[in-house]
Image (tube, rainbow, N blue to C red; front, side, top):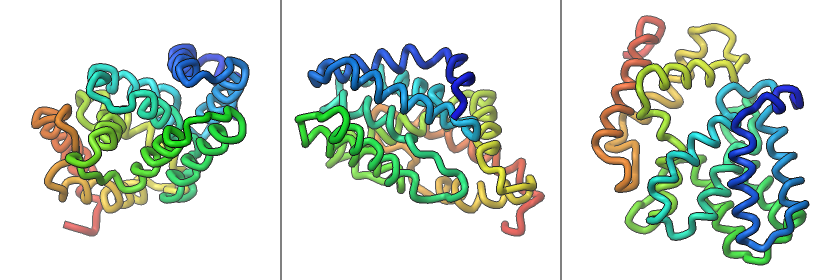
Length: 231
């Protein structure tokens, strides 16, 4: 864990304030709340992280902010965003979501001792949704909003999207060549998304965001086209 990198992280005070404000509303004492956040921030400063950092957390929180009044449980959404990448093992493509949910459950139950058990379970449930990014928005509006803010980066301007894709690639050094990265990126992520009717689930992310996200994904795929043994 890179403490010096963490010291340079300009996003940390803002995310910490949101974390502590939420804990204050839950009537959690300041010291355990700050201790938990400090440990979590060190995880987000791990040297192998280039995209899944506190910068990403803050981006998601900023995407949530305009829609906060429509949330059923805003505090749960905030905590799920902050903890969603608590564990980031890039040697595997699966399993981090469950590990991050368990990291939250340990903090919530053993350290913070949050008394609202429904709240604790709801945050864990939201984090686990990121394993498949599928939800019925008519039955789970908070889940839909949470997943959409997590993928809001896909609908950003092309320059921001390209920076996201470049930083994400740096997190997978085991995909040593550009060809390896291109194949994995297309097969595991881009093509499955483009085959879906819609990427975004909630009413807050409409046709404009949908079209921009698909345009960004198609442009990225086009850059890899000549390297792929698939049509």
